[in-house]
Length: 99
Image (cartoon, rainbow, N blue to C red; front, side):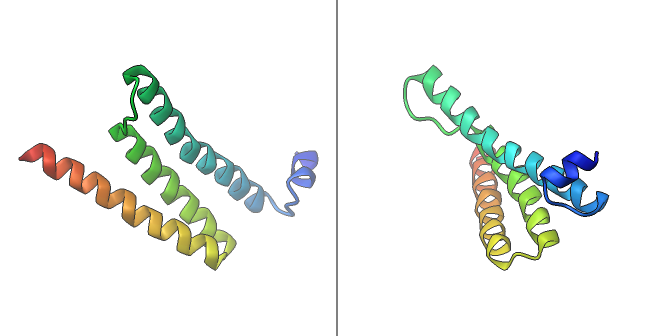
């Protein structure tokens, strides 16, 4: 485990857990592009599946938590705004489906 901590430039197991969480959050956030790309390829046109917004929201919330832990105001602002936008898109999608 020491080699991993050295490779990731962390000094405690808590920091290591947060960095691993950050990597998982980034993977979740990146998965949204894969979902959108696959859906578009299958439809042979640009499509935005609802899963894109769920991956965006989950990845954004996870990255926001990581940014808050790292106390990075630029990262916090960027992710907080994204979370609002992803939530609003999901709200609009669900509202349209109820009508």
